[in-house]
Length: 187
Image: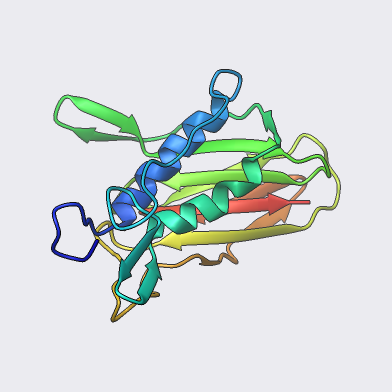
């Protein structure tokens, strides 16, 4: 497929947020969702790769799948968000923040957070039940809702380190920017 064909579709941060919401939902319902896959990988709806001849670029959705890979073969942990604003669109509303949490066999906890608001950042506190020294690393994917990668700017939207996590007395605190997805790894 090439840009301009009827099946070609650009992929934006909006698509990345949709992927994050759905992967968080699938993870939170892993007792019922045993397998899910992306239908198209290249150049079409919600694709992870765009190509043009010999050129290739990664889409915002690619980075979401890379962040969420840590939930695979892990055990779901109970998690709840409280005090979350909603985003209103006419008669419909959705929570501004979505999350899921899992733990791998080696004890590493993965938290994936998505902020659907195009304008509002939110403070987040994560209370860890076990109070012990932990190492925390985080990645973020963020940009304007219509931000996307092109062959001229293939890295306009990419996963980057997130340094905004503070820990005190077993609680992690951060501010999740508008239109972003954060993956925290706690070991």
